[in-house]
Length: 255
Image (cartoon, rainbow, N blue to C red; front, side):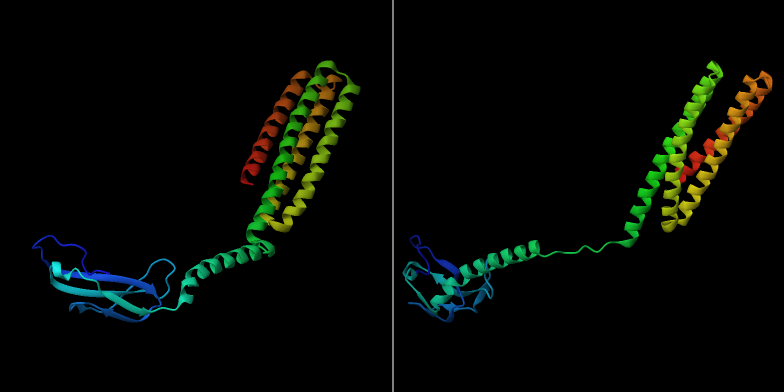
């Protein structure tokens, strides 16, 4: 290896520093030069897959001219088995990666549950069911009104009785489901259970007003009260119904 490869005529290099990077793990490094050079302290250069780094021989020479274009030699000890060290490291790394992946896939990792979050999700699911049931029950309120309105027009007792019983049956089924949900919520969230109970109480009062309205309708149709008395009573019952519905809607929003 040449210290310098080429110089123009009468060209002089005032100062030159040459670095020779050797394989990793070399030992007993020796430099042989045909002319005097200054050997500086060896350096270490790290590249990919290096562990301790590669030895770098550093030499310095002043006032280089054409006569210095000569070969120099670097001697060092290097075990041939180290040629396979880096390939073996790559193979080992991939092997360990595959082993880790296989172990990860085959192991049954149990995920610890957050009890607080789980409880909140259960409560929310129950509340959603309550909201759904009450929405259906609110729709039945309008069905009640439609049945009574039809009865006022056609005065068909048998038809009214059949339709009213059907609405009552649907209403009872929804109330039973809400009672079951109320019991489940009480086990998890007492404040929410109190709100559901209040909702049930308001519904009970609403049904009483519905029955009172039916009773007043039957009385006016049978001539027991005047039309004016009926209108006054119906207006009063209607105002109370509106108030109850507003209270129920407020509770639903608070849930």
